Length: 271
Image 1 (cartoon, one colour):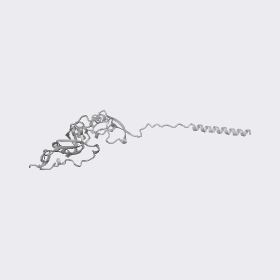
Image 2 (cartoon, helix red, strand yellow):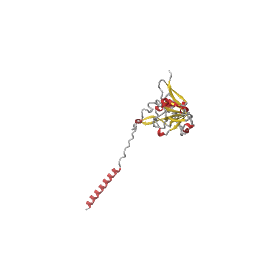
Image 3 (cartoon, one colour):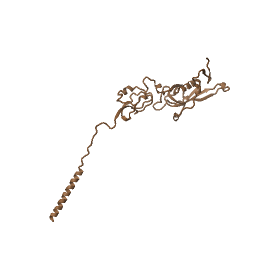
């Protein structure tokens, strides 16, 4: 009896010791090894020349350029990189903005006035002409017309008394439609807070060669030219009718265009 009890006690002690050994090994799990990768980053970067602040149209870039790391896959062909032009900040600091640019935007040479070019000629689209016309507060929407607005040009003139049966009367017509204003006097943009500094006396308009001829004739005929401000929602509309009759004889041989008492006529030229 005593021997059997000793055997059972021995088995119990051995089982308890085995359980403790297993528990100890399970608790002492080796710490996970942390691997630090000191190699190249997963995304390859390149330094791109960007604007550190907004640049109004016609302003110099000086003090608003810096290098910024960009993913190589996002670098466009028009961007300026440090690897290709390390001295770009020094070289371009005096360049003028051909269009308005904004902070954080990568700089492109296509948005700068070319070396040796005048500012106005550089902002004109191919085939367009810049023509100046006199304006006043009462002929320019009360002075609220700003550069980059779109306008209609309205001509007011007196009719020929001979054609109206005596007594003159005024004739008003829209001679040009949806015309972009390039500048008011020498200002090519509104001020930084969007306010007019003063009422301009001259508006420079972006015109086609045909439109430039129309307004040149109209300035000789008109008692007054008025600029009518258009909604920004209408800027994509294309004018269907303009006062082409003012220059309809252009290119014809043997005719002379006469402007008499505000009326346009064509007569045969003397040979």
